[in-house]
Amino acid sequence: MRSLDRYCTAPQAKPALLKTFHAPEYIEALKRAEDTQKISEHDRKRYQLGTVSNPVFKGMFARPATSVGSSLLAAELVANGGVAYAMGGGLHHGLTDRANGFCFLNDLVFAILRLRSLGVERIAYVDLDAHHCDGVQAAFSGDRDLLMISTHEAKRWPFTGGLSENIIDQQMNIPLLKNCNNEEFNLFMEDCVFPALARFAPEAIIIQGGADAVCDDPLSRLGLSNYTLWNAVKRLKERCDKVILTGGGGYNPWTVARLWAGFWLVLNDRSPFIELPSGAQRVLESLSWQRKLRPSSDLITQLYDAPPEKAQLIRPETAALAKHIRNLHAL
Image (cartoon, rainbow, N blue to C red; front, side, top):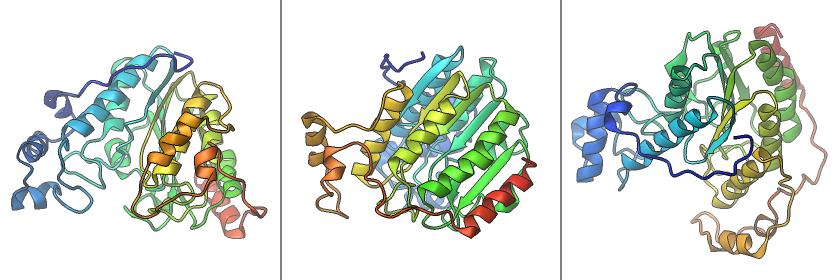
């Protein structure tokens, strides 16, 4: 599948399959919570269910289980070459035995394991979310056939992914400084990410395309334009013939919708720098968000973010950080 011309309904992963990575007792607790819409004190403390960041809701098992199903299907579709976009995936905080950061399961782990079962051994995982992929890192720590790369905001929850957690050809953690701009992000991609991928030579690349690193997202303080992440995905796609892209975080409905729609165009080798047709504008106009009554007009009429008003410069501390990461990885 070199272009995304096929649409598939994601299956819901069954409990027996989920228990091959997640603790069986946790899966049962999650199903019980969905069925009863209640959490015992034991389950709240043991499995972190029913907390502010892992709330009780209808579909709290079915929804993430379908995310797992979507990423499993994506792995099957690209195992012999191609591109798949599992927009409902990207639950990178999910841990083996408890919920974590709005992630009740970890579809990305299952995608990696499914590729392995289909003979694709050497895999790169690149995470563009503003929050560190603590669940994926924990699952594959010490795995020499997986290169995990994460660009995330420094000093932000879950407070993992620091410079001390870098391992050559296994873990590249890039903690971005507050207000990281497009030029700075591109520096890390050019000087750190792409050289590391070239040396590792993966058979497949999985990209987590979280939208919370984009300007105007309330849960990060990064300053990226959506076209910077589009370019990152485009460049990553060029480096491998087996590529999976998932969704991820993102809490501003207008910036999320525009970023992820642009990803679809990029994966199909089409330009995302377009004015939106009237139907798309009506969809965006219909969205609501308690933090903002009305978005600016450019968030409705065009897919791409407006360019910054001032030239963006690479700060000395950013250049020093990129150099330090290169040295850590002997690039």
